Image (cartoon, rainbow, N blue to C red; front, side):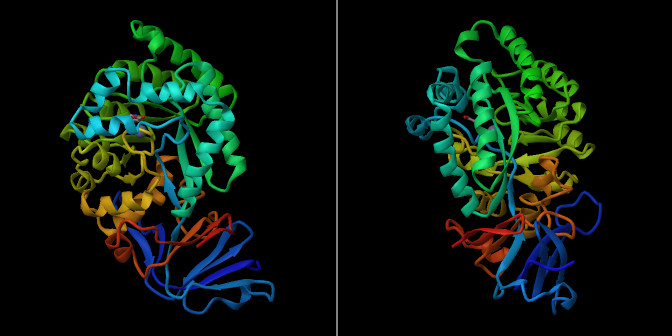
Length: 413
Ligand SMILES: O=C(O)CC1=NCN=C1
Ligand SMILES: [Zn+2]
């Protein structure tokens, strides 16, 4: 085995390798100094500290001295509404004036505003717009992104969003994991026929699946959006077709979506700002990943999910942006991490675990990415800071120095 690339003289090397199988948030390996990573083609072949083992080295090996910088697995943004047309800055003033998110939606704004601009956008317009967001995400150290549909809300436009996501995966280096989310809101044409739309979503499921356009199915289980029963019907139909499941739960009102996630075996339950003790108990006794979105709390000026309580209960937490044109119009996962530290009271190891191996679990990719371990993909991010603590303390700028995807340098500041 000969190395194509060696990264050495690393400051803190956050491998995110889990030191045990306990459902804890601080049990990841951190090599404190002088770390190295040996890469052959697209895979990691050795990780350690001190002298790089000579048996891997050849005259052709590229040796990169990282001069004490922080190194982590490529960051994973496990919850985004990436592909969408238009923007909703016109609603920002309403939000600041205290108009509730669900009231804006009920008045035909919110998701339904993004619906109009997404339906009116061509595939090329969506591709061009989303390439810019993906460039921001890459430069912020992100190498894998989950991307939900849900602004088409009819078969033609849902397929358009999902096709755009697929095409984007070939046009730039960030890996895209696709989620079908036609159950995001009820479109105007079904305004007085909610049941008809639930049946239409169920009719779309096999079509999307046979085109291999989505790995996950997600639903907005929320007051005045989709009830727990409607969510159960759609997710059960999706599960029978082979979809893995996600659920937006307890964002604004706690309906019992979290308990449904545990009952139905969802991969993840997301938002959880209003999670109850019963929901915490249900998740603690399941393998469901709790994907928290603190930048959405920040932007909606809502309170934050009770992360500390969830961590004490043994729940596995991921953190992601929820990037979307309404409740969180920001691609900045680094800022999410800094909010996670300051407002969710998460420790550095907990925060970095939440955007690496736990985010990989939230998209069921923990066997190939999410940690710097032998045999895993060489998705690696270098930050121009000495430690996790400094990264979280110095907020609001981009700390990325360089990003490697499948062992290749894809960004250098
Ligand atoms: O408002 C949006 O566009 C995205 C969103 N879906 C559920 N919560 C937020
Ligand atoms: Zn969302």
